[in-house]
Length: 117
Image 1 (cartoon, rainbow, N blue to C red):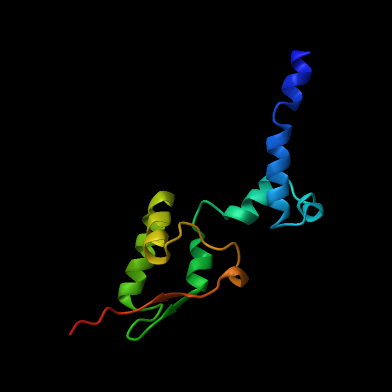
Image 2: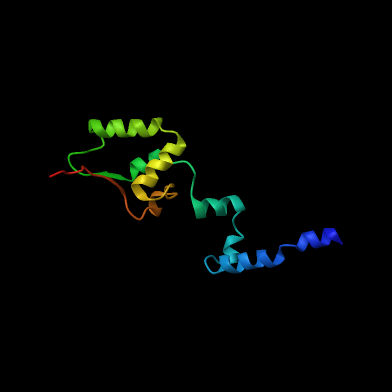
């Protein structure tokens, strides 16, 4: 009897979660993915893909990808821990994860020079 109770103990809560999720994603589509794949699609990757970030970066004059300051910037990013990379992305974009693919970016990562008067 206790075993049967524990198996259905959270049925009401699970049904509520499923109803809420179904308002955003059709459940039949969601069934195609494993929980790991669904989590990745919703939250993105924990680690910052520097190759993707570099590909999606544009530079304002006087900077270019080969500018000495930019070479130092990318070298620094390579040396950062995953947590430090996430903090830098959060500082620059108010998010700690990158979109999964280049097509998912709503705008490019832009490096500009700070002008003072």
